[in-house]
Image 1 (cartoon, rainbow, N blue to C red):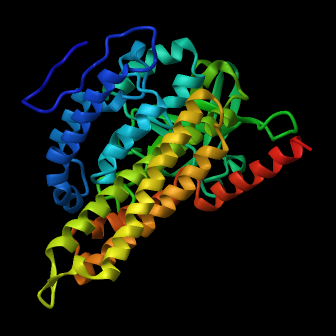
Image 2 (cartoon, rainbow, N blue to C red):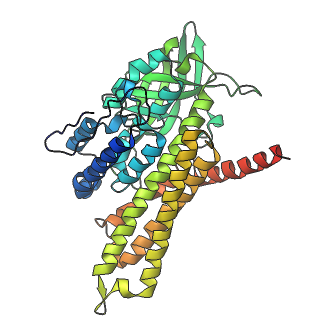
Image 3 (cartoon, rainbow, N blue to C red):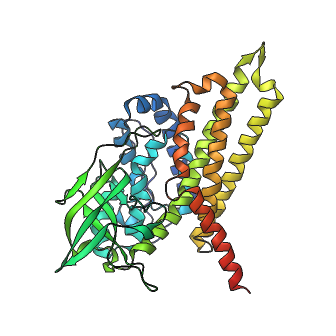
Length: 406
């Protein structure tokens, strides 16, 4: 193992074990402790700065890269920390305690974009891209969503047409996280009409500087200031055959579904971390703010709100841990992830709403943490599959499973 710090900042403990994708528990305990300290001591005090400038300060980005946060879920052989999903959710809950845009800065590298390469890339593709993704030198964007194809990739209109040994990509993606900083786009495109045996969707690795790639202006969003999304247009973008992920034109849909399922558990855990922050802010305010000479926390109706918040946090924490365990063992990689995302993202919305209510008029003021949290968490019910899509996945999956047993 190797311990190191930079400018007296908390350091990550980098596991030097090889051949084991899971960081040993004693090492991970230190990793998680130092991430939590960094979040609470370095990032939380700068939340207003992040919100007001709509940007993550360069020094925080540099420190995050030095700590290995851009590649904590990338296997060690490519320079990452090699955390598995059980460990990932603990990190996500720690990161959720502060501005969600901070996590978003490196979320696609560890999550939906990076995991496509980890799970489906060829050895050559992995060796070319994953070291840079793990170090933060390359920001990878997951280019799936477009008009008419968000939570359901089967509606894709972006096309990839073979032309000799190359592919020509045409189409427009929207709401692409980190598009303005991306060095690599993981692009989903239709190569053929869907059939009973094939979805006709492939995935391509498109460097951001490829001719024909055009990134639009940064989107203006309701919340999550500092997280940058934008439209990306592919205007007759030509890439070689080595850009086809896995060297297989039919791997795209499976890659998307696998990455999204894993990402849904991560988002659920992130929601739990944010709900914990909203609860802590509520308890602190209730214990100190007064009404009629009494702390408002002495009032039973306030206590009831705090109790509902606490119940949601505890239930969510248990749920994401179980979902992650079942995903890692292979027991459940479909219903569990969707159920966890559905419950936890809805739960954090309710907890955030109660937090504003506990604060009263103060909770509606722009620089009060619960006001920002209230806006930030609304997006969690939309991306990586809306709550409605999660209900369809869970309900449909249960019915299909029941039919198989009859």
